[in-house]
Length: 453
Ligand code: SAH
Ligand code: SF4
Ligand code: F3S
Image 1: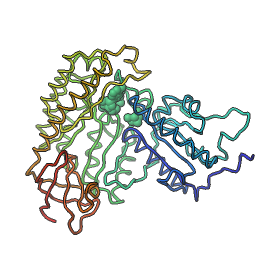
Image 2 (image 1 turned 30 degrees about the vertical axis):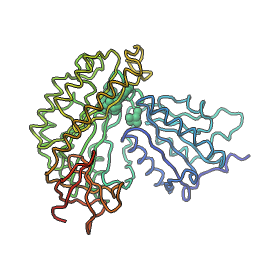
Image 3 (image 1 turned 90 degrees about the vertical axis):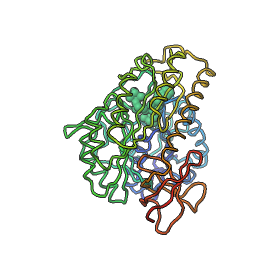
Image 4 (image 1 turned 120 degrees about the vertical axis):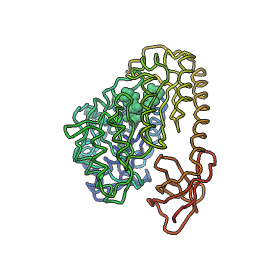
């Protein structure tokens, strides 16, 4: 069998990409998409038509890895039907598990970590699938960490969403005791400021008016050309851009300079996602979060004083090792004090290779689940309360899409990132900005009427 028969023709080749994990993985998938499209390939949503199948994976919790393995396993039959198809596993779980992946799943051709995506491009267009060599050792894993890889010079493809998510820094220099991200994403590095501005301008030139800046600790962004506050001020000057969001800032780097920049930049939305993790000082210390409960509350007060009608969302972990009933109550009491608009709530999942992994779990699975349910129940009350506080307000909505329930209606988001359903009206389309009055809450969705359409 010739090993040279399977060169992908860039003019006709199709790629399929499945993405797990956070928005930074989404961004990387779009960046790889643009690498492949620059070579002439096109994207397909039908895996059975693809020449290259890529799965971008996440390792943040055990469940995320289980889902990725199941998905990769399910791709075996494409390879059976068309042996020339290439299957690549990329992203954080590729970095985390490396060799284990092709050992467990032989149909995987390439395992490529987050610093090696330039290799992925050359692999895809190389002459043969490595699996077809007989008798010779074939290399399948590319996971060398590169502390300087920022993918300068590349831009992510725009994926049709009305908001462009743009990664401005990669990696993480924190060492939160529960978290796998520093292991798989490497050290923190900030992208060149001008290249970010260029990517934002490009999105605007393609009709996009909202950007969300991404980084694991987005507000520790810093280059010689300026820090995160300076970047916000710079983006404020981009003509045609109307809304700026970012995630996730770290409380340790949330200072008055940033709050002032947020308040003074009219394009920065009145919404912030500020991960808390726990309301207990002893848990925060054990998690190595570098702030206290009191400092977190102080940031929230300063933000609320500076930015009217600010929506605050957060991430909360319950059931971390050593968490007592009192520690958990401290999280609930902080939630009652702050009243988050929404929380992403997680049950602690031990990750091998993290500082907390060696410590035996404090709670049984049922005990963890019980706390998880209590935190969700309290958040639900606050979410409804915060939505009710929107009733009667005048709000600008950016239309995202048709409503999933009723195609005669539209769904959009307020500047504070709340979903609102509005009726159809002449001239309304995806990407439109409309002025509304919020009239009703149905479940977790608000409804609005037009003020000027
Ligand atoms: N860089 C962000 C978090 C990224 S991970 C920050 O520091 O805010 C997203 C969220 O996943 C975290 O905020 C945390 O709440 C959760 N998480 C991370 N590791 C976890 C683990 N081992 N178990 C449960 N939740 C975890
Ligand atoms: Fe993980 Fe902490 Fe870094 Fe966030 S700041 S990515 S939780 S180590
Ligand atoms: Fe998951 Fe990696 Fe993001 S572990 S949460 S995809 S940085």
